Length: 493
Image (tube, rainbow, N blue to C red; front, side):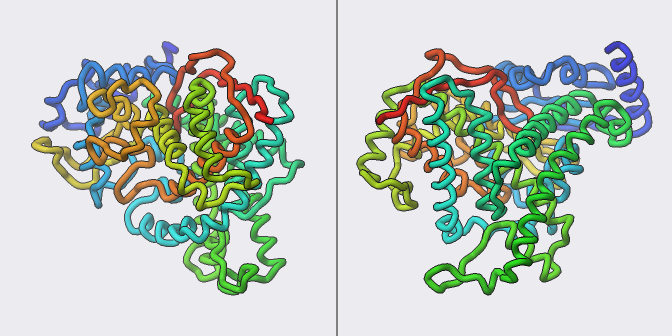
């Protein structure tokens, strides 16, 4: 530890002496933790354990307000949690570049939609947007329903015993994203590979967080020649191999069937739009994207399409188990809409207004992505405050969603907040981000969450292991529970 600190100090001193000339900056007038000479607030980052970093940030917001500044070796990071400021940042048409820490994921996600910017990002977004067209979501409905029924069957086999939610739900969302967006069914004999992939994603998040808090590891050459860097490389290989196998499997199926997107028709004779991976492979055949680009997008969507939704469902089931009245109201709504039908349809989902409010309130309390970072490429103003090019802005969604002035009794679970759809500010609630870089898959995520929660509540009464218990949460790539969450699923009949 002492050696690491000495190395960090030496690197910081050399970098500062060689490259940084302190210039006056309006951000320096904002409050924030005390800044040490040269290294600024690097020490605060270094001494914060990964599972405590979210708590530290929340504490700073309470102490300094909705705007405060970190300074790391001359680089300024503006932290914001006010809806007016967040609207300016997220709605900006030019400042869409992700901040430096996202670069640590480039060896995994490459120039995929999450990390790319500028013309490249616009081109990829245009290719991928049709993936989540309403007609495709209708095609996905049967797969999501089938996977949900498989989940219900597996939960019935638990015979009312405590179930650890995250591993169980993560399997379900991974199988679902593979069969919908990727067109690939994960067979039972791939279970070990699936577990390895999920563990790899979890480890990548922890390794990224550890790297963020150690400034001397920000340099790629330095990082890759450390034990942490070599471990990251091994973890990365597991995740990339899994995604590559998904691509090769789908490509082989397409070549075997000799069917293109334009030629494929559904069972009533009309052309059917296919899944994301099919569109990417078709774009490759047209010279619009290469195989490396396909890998980038598949790795991005495999991660974003299963992990974020799994966490939202995990927190949602935890809350339902704790609030029997909310659970029963969902059950009554489902019964009145679905009746004795065996399957939930898209039209059923559209009518489930209370369930939608429950999901929205879950995402308010536990936003899957608690922070968004932007590197500023063009000067802009937040009111009278000038934010210069080269600065970083961190949007604190977690703190935004817990503001008492926007959500009275903010720590309480109250789905009725969202029944009127009246927010005190249009950017007071942004679980899927907003503006030009909003989440491309948010309708798919809502469809999957609605289908899953409605079928589970129709089939089970949920009981918490410990009434009122709440897990500690931490932020890596997403918001995660530090402790396992257990729920009993008691069959209704």
